[in-house]
Image (cartoon, rainbow, N blue to C red; front, side):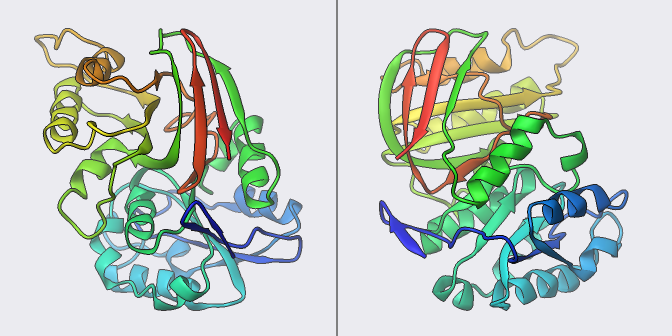
Length: 304
């Protein structure tokens, strides 16, 4: 492992390495053979946890089973990366029962998004360890080729930089900082807990799905009133998909709501970053220092 800007980078993968798939949250609706096939095509051996085929109400087995499954892979030195098979809801129910003692000594990549924001934030807050916000086995069959290739590049230590065009006007600027973030709802739910990160001098990535616009506004007020936006170095806004409105319209789009809450600050803000609950969900290395160069519609994100 290597230290990068005070955060630990787990060892990158090599052909022949073994990776695990577990379900820390919601149960799978179908098999994940497509994902296993893809990972094997990268030269990886794949181990499936008990939770992959487990069911307990809406969860992938009881809290105890999901905890034991994740714990087994956190402790096993032969497992070089852990994929969360899907998100949904449930990771927060087991996070305090997980023991990261061995993980802290021998870190490994943890991969996922959405509900897996709980794991990302927890290991960055407490153990200053990088992780991957990226496609999961459930979403791999529908994942775009660029998103799947970005996951492979991140795991195998190949260059991973992004240039894209936004269809919403950004706030110009250039900045560098450690990248943190994930699902906005989960970031707010972690406030006040041991899993809450320090937002100071960070570049924040946010995405969400299926929320009401008024709820988005309320969550942004939480970030603002708690001082989390004050000392950011930059904001990367991913996809806010399937957003809902009330019978009496809220009157602003998701992007307009977000911009209204950061309008008084000077850090760069970019929209439409290809990550979140979309098929083109590009991999992001949380805990890694990045530079962002934002123009009105053109954006470059580079890892340092």
